[in-house]
Image 1 (tube, one colour):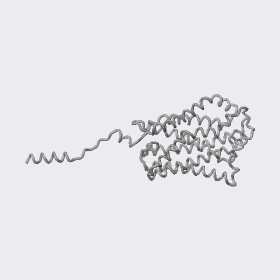
Image 2 (spheres, helix red, strand yellow; image 1 turned 135 degrees about the vertical axis):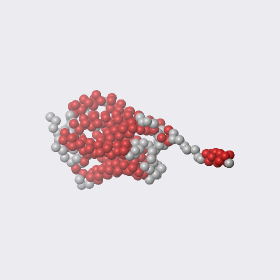
Image 3 (cartoon, helix red, strand yellow; image 1 turned 90 degrees about the vertical axis):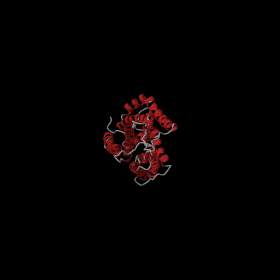
Image 4 (cartoon, helix red, strand yellow; image 1 turned 180 degrees about the vertical axis):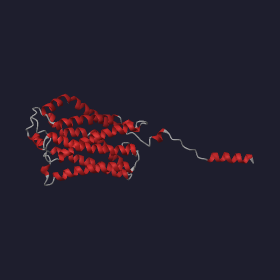
Length: 298
């Protein structure tokens, strides 16, 4: 009898399936870093742009002193801040797939994307303004509005990340995570709508309300297309379409490797190329009429 009981206990213990123990791979939630080529493109482009800014910094600062524009000075300083954060973000891609770096990666990503968004929103604000009392008033108004928008955006993303545990800045996490892709869809939809509105006004009878500078509309067209592609990729990712991450990553690569140099070429490069610092030529007259320069400088 005792032998039978012992045999039953032995058989039952053998038949029970082993309980898998969590390991480091499972703890990473299937996070995967991109390959060397992806990282090289990001780091190379970000580093080259920072080096370019550094090489020309002394000359550009001298021209800013002579040009005396609150707007250009502020954008140049903000551009430096965004470029530094972007270089750090591109150089530390390994953090998103390393144990113990989740909080650091989220904070760095939050600061970097907020810096880029602040530049983008404030530039859109200048394009949409119709009249200005003075350069300083325009600057204060635009940066107040863009600051509020960016602060709300940061707060919302922080709640998503640290409150609900949404893997907002991690690749290959949560595939069809509805909260993650829902937030990106909303943001890209709003930006696409704003750029679409500017293009509509440009081709309408209200065209004279916008700055008469063709390069600005090349910028708007490209930003409309990029945000539209990213919006489409986010929507496909929300329903689990395979190539959606590829489309979304195109937008990521653009913002972190192309956007800052493109912004510099469109809005600042001509200012720094001027040799005589005269603001009464056709180009600067157009920008001054649009409110880009300060009318109260003597």
